[in-house]
Length: 186
View 1: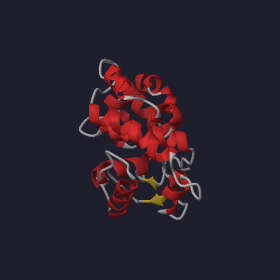
View 2 (view 1 turned 90 degrees about the vertical axis):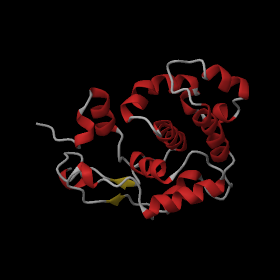
View 3 (view 1 turned 30 degrees about the vertical axis):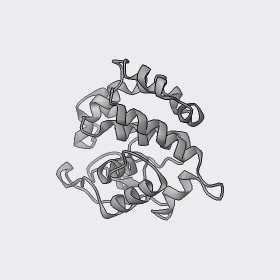
């Protein structure tokens, strides 16, 4: 019998996300951008809601193509606000466009991915968590990265969103010790 983290057992979509994406190290800028966007959409909502709307977000944001998203206009945002297939929050949609612009205009001497992974010295942080109740909402590291992201111009990247993003992108591995996807069980 497959053992997953408790939060991942509520639906096939949750299980698939857990099994195939969550806490897996990601370095691709476009994928990192998508994961960041998904976490911004979640603020105040359930992760299931975000997953249910993921395909519509991918369609509306051109599969998170940074150049195309960065070029979106106020008229595009108005159009998206009419799409019932996505989370229609003006601030979150505007943050998507803004954050694409920030990544696209990253200083040439580095990359967003390299900058992000430098916070963990290129290696995922492993927390030994036995129960979902032990999962933190944020950490000192997430608070620090959140502040640094805001300095760079990112929007909608509070400490809780940032911590979820670090998990999603695999900089932090918070699979429960009992989970088949925990590094100790691989």
